Length: 127
Image 1: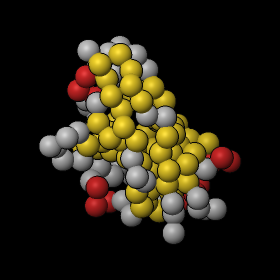
Image 2: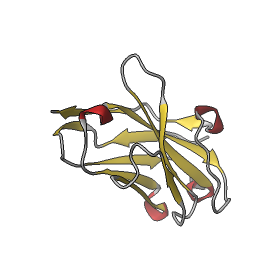
Image 3: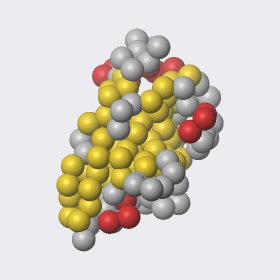
Image 4: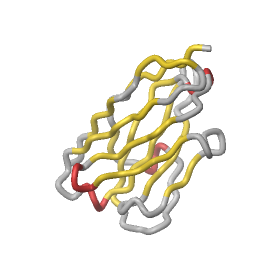
């Protein structure tokens, strides 16, 4: 069982930055790949990015590529999402999710690929 807790959301002006954190409870967190998703009001939850178990491989949605960066600190059981050059369309509830995987470059973009989810953190971007 893995429990995930997101933090770091808030209100930011367009063009600004935020760093989200996803803290995990699992002792074996280093054997899990992590994904970030987001959901805006009235829209489906969409894939943002994923990072492999070691942090050596990341993959992003086209909409955030070049602006968002994922990293992880397995010693602290935490994954980060650095969001730069934020746009009003980035506003959403952001969720982290985890799945057991030690593959180097496995890309999982569907919500059904992930077994564990956090409760989400709100990101608001003012224009």
